[in-house]
Amino acid sequence: MYINLLSFFKTYKYPLLYAACGPVICAALIFIARTCPDLAQLYASYIFPIFPNTLGRLLSFFPFSVFEVSLYLLSLGVLFTLFAALISLLHKSGRHWLLLRTPKIMVTALCLCTTILLMITLTCSINYSRDGIAKDMGIVTGPASHDNLVSLCLLLIDDVNSLTPEGDMSMTALHKKTKKSMEALGKKYPSLNGYYPNPKPVIMSSWMSDIGLTGIFSPYTIEANYNKDVPDYIKPYTICHELSHLQGYIGEDDAGFIAYLACANSESEELRYSGAINALSFVLNALYEDSTEEEYQRILSKIPERATADLKRNQQYWQKHQGTASRISTAVNDTYLKANAQSDGIQSYGRMVDLLLAYYGLNSHAI
Image 1 (cartoon, rainbow, N blue to C red):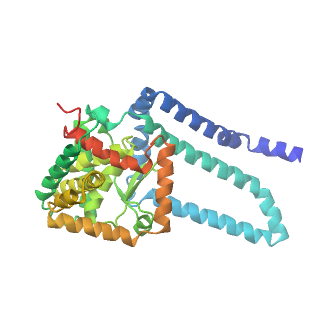
Image 2: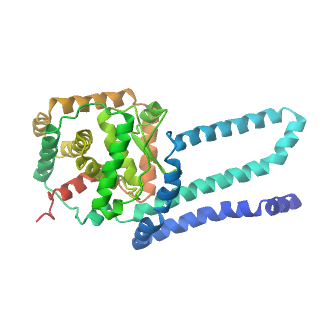
């Protein structure tokens, strides 16, 4: 047995070394990023852009989500391996074949897990410790009064009232306009200036809906994936949100706020409407927790009929997809965010309201 183990370690010396050192390197990088935010900022500014400029640029040419297809292929590979293993156990020669190949299969699986861990560390985890968009824009978040929150809500309602989007956009137009809006924002704010790959609609978007996702950034393929089945007004904002992650803004509050800015400053009325109504949804949620029912209903009555219908349609859409899968997904996402120093968990999405208040000068730091 000792000889067999020695032979095993000798044969797979380098793959095992990689599998053993990878997690240690990841832990060290995350620790350094959290204890030295300045280094995390340097990483986000000078090293992370290598990924969207190489892998992201290369995979952008594919009209489908490489991340999604890779998940299917990986699942098929695992199922095939398990099936082959079960078949092999039925025959003596097969058991011998399986015994010979088990070490290689195990080492390959270990190396794959290490690669996945390294990629998510290099493209996500370190960036959680970078400067937020507020610092890069020179705005300061802080306490805001109830009246400030009401003022922001009315401001966004006015924006929604002033917009009359024509309706459905083609997928090509949607991708082109969202990329153009993000690129334009990058000219105004240097930290957002970089390469933006093509957004990718997920083929099995119904599965995304079942787990409560409108979009997902793939840290392995550097792609901005979005749910093509959600109501139309959700899509532009979602795509801009996911594209924000590709510039190293991994925090959900930052990505949401950047998405709003990209949409709000777009030449497209559809994008401006998407940004305004999605931001309004966040602010309404905050206002609901901080106002009387009478006041809340009074403000809701000011929302135009079209926007009210859109919000209701969105609510009905997600009600159809509520279930065990969506609850598990929410819990997993909450745990993931907390593990990456986002102490509020899924509530970090709500901190976008603080950024909106600061942007419009509606907090205690306003002059």
